[in-house]
Image (cartoon, rainbow, N blue to C red; front, side, top):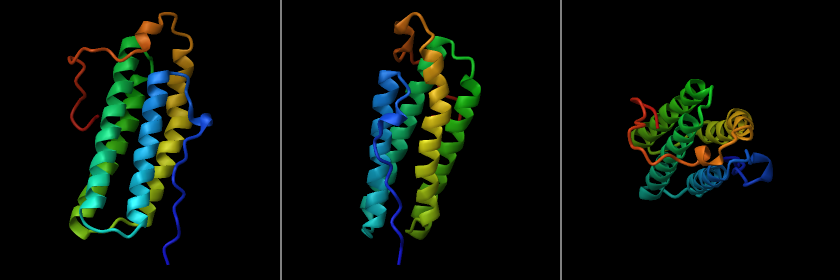
Length: 156
């Protein structure tokens, strides 16, 4: 019998103090919770694939917004933060490939994503939140509209 993977709950302790990022992280946690619920429900076929696609797209968008805000505010640890995002997106791509090949998702894969997202928010994203609290011009903490900030290959 498959044990239930705790779905990531929205929690005030996950707030980093940058409203746009916090709202996006809430959405990312919801998408991840939906993916966990769909996989654990035992539903097969298109629902799992759709849940993976939604999770992947939301993560990619969230990471791009974060990175653009980091560029705009002059965040000193951008490269390290991006490398975490790259690693995560590579794992999502692997999850997607595994689903397409085997039509199953091992429990440890779901556990990895839940644990990674929570650890990333509470450690890595929080560092940006602490930096952002020192930025005097709050307008630098909104997503730049420039499309010239193109992510590198494999990055969100």
